[in-house]
Length: 231
Ligand SMILES: [Zn+2]
Image 1 (cartoon, rainbow, N blue to C red):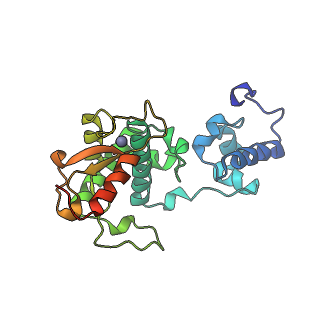
Image 2: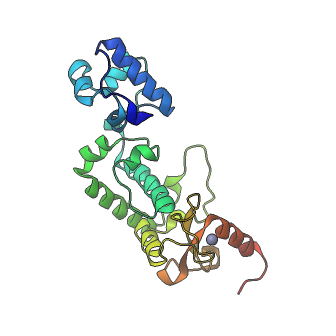
Image 3: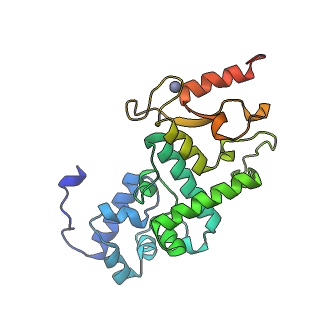
């Protein structure tokens, strides 16, 4: 168990440090970020002092380094934080904390967010603003991953700004308005904010036309939407 580990390595020779970095990367199955060092027996301070930073240490240890953050665009950072926010919101009904970046497998650690916006709260505010702006502009295409074509006619849930989605979930007490379940009593449950009258039927993105649905009910409703009649 992680909690039983001693906090220090038996020695701090380069090979012991590299082995520790490799061990953590292996257990995570992805490149290490700064946040991961919290549970490591090697501090960032030591890596910085001895090798110049995490990235350099990983390189010497023969490990992949995470994307080079200084070259990451604001938009990529915002999009990734929005993705984490979406997951946290759907799973736990709250806004994300710094730790959620690693808990939800974010591509970036807190470092680049801190460097860009100066604090976690300001980074979160930037995401909300960006999400609002994106919804107003009707942005859909820039969220498409390369190689995955997206139908321009098909509107996605992305069109509902994060801020509004949060308000709807809060209004509905983070429960499915159909079956009443919530992630607090059904941990596997994922909540969605859904249009009462579908967007494809010109349902507006307003509080009155939005509701919280769980995965199951949302899928059931999807069938209804495809059906010929619905009041
Ligand atoms: Zn439900």
